[in-house]
Length: 282
Image (cartoon, rainbow, N blue to C red; front, side):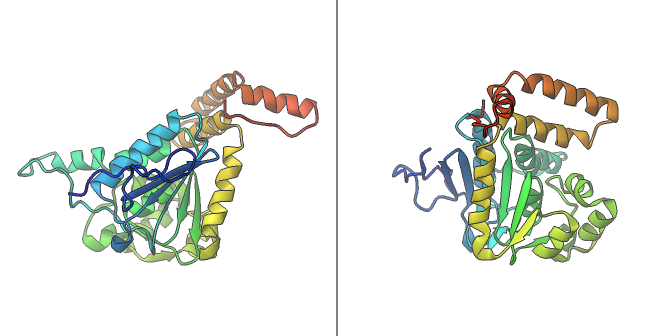
């Protein structure tokens, strides 16, 4: 079982010698942007139990840390994430009824929920193949950038499995039920350009431009009104499961909460004073 990965950088982006140089998760925070990088290129970044727990912890830290104002989730090598690697997961002996459902709830679903619930905007920079839970990890992000060589695969049907990691929740909301069923019933490889056309990807860029584009987008978010963006994310995510009255009530309450922030006051003041706003994320 691989050891628990640790940060290899501190909050200034400099290398931290206390971290392992071959960490399964690379992490750096610089200029308000937290970058989380899956680092098992030899396994196409199939995510291990340890990696999953580390990503969940880093997303939770991003929510609580006022110095983090945007998150980028990416990977090394040719694959973004080829799915789940269950080797190394804790074992409890013989399987009993309920074990599978419990494993899904505490594993894949927690990972996807951590992205959806992160209080900072999360950008997926998809550098290569995103299959199974790897595709759902990207689709759960607020914005998705993809390299031209990237592809997305709902691989579950190829193994006779039911999609997990929130796939049957995410895809219909992104592309509608008919398209979602087509992707999940056939399990065909979906090139990045086609994923963009369907609305699963915000923008496809040349491979060599992916990191710079993700950095530029994240920096724009990090310089924005962080609490306003967090509340907007919450409203949009919740709206898909709410009726109009509930959505309108949530919107009004979000405005009430947001107007107590310094950034909201700065935004209004900058408009009145005809100058560019200087948001601090509070």
